[in-house]
Figure 1 (cartoon, helix red, strand yellow):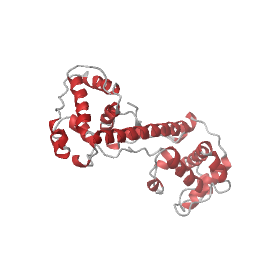
Figure 2 (cartoon, one colour):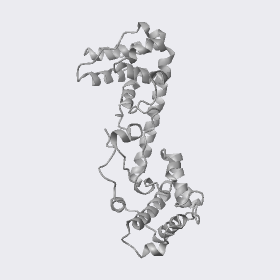
Figure 3 (tube, rainbow, N blue to C red):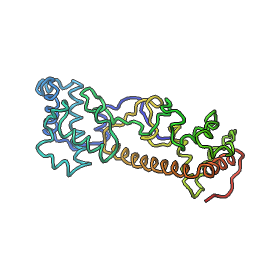
Figure 4 (cartoon, rainbow, N blue to C red):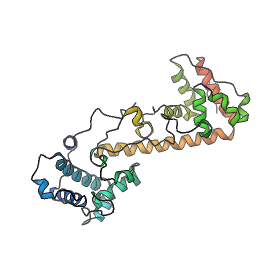
Length: 295
């Protein structure tokens, strides 16, 4: 599984060493000055007299970093803001109009961001790392929803894992009263065998193992898996490489969500036959048998 968190927050100066940027000192200082004026903090001259002040250094790096990321990922919009990049955003404060436009474009075109939260002047993520939050519909770590309110595909996953959930299904779907019960796996070979059987299907059941991984936060996709209570904070630095990777991960996550919804709708159209087929694959894997694919 993809590593989701590091052991410490990356130093912003280390980021520049790993991924050099084209620094325009004048524009960076102009941006920094706008941020300081907006927050009514010490003026740029006072900060400039204290070069060892970590806050000053961090703000300089942040100004340069967002400026260059904006230029790289959204060049047309960057050019359109010429002359207004470093103006203060009076509605939000402590942030320039260029930064507001850049972060808004990231949220619209690359991957989700909690913008309302990020506009907070005390939000450290604007400086240190991208705020990565799981985008699943449900919080499996805290069981946000009762069983009867879950989508069928998730009910099946929880029911297959054992417990009282399977006994609750017939009350929700009477057609399942005569459906065979899933066996309890007792072999380490069960899961890879079950995944192989599902992948060989010519129906949306091919997706079922991934739904199990979603519930377990083990898909390998940061937008699906990351949960602070399980993995801690995800410190993903604001760099070109990381933003490109996060955007690709988000596209993959959206495809997984679409296929999960398709599987759910497919199961609902004929629950007895199609869930019965899923149980058959599950039990075959539990018994150590692999047969032909089913269309």
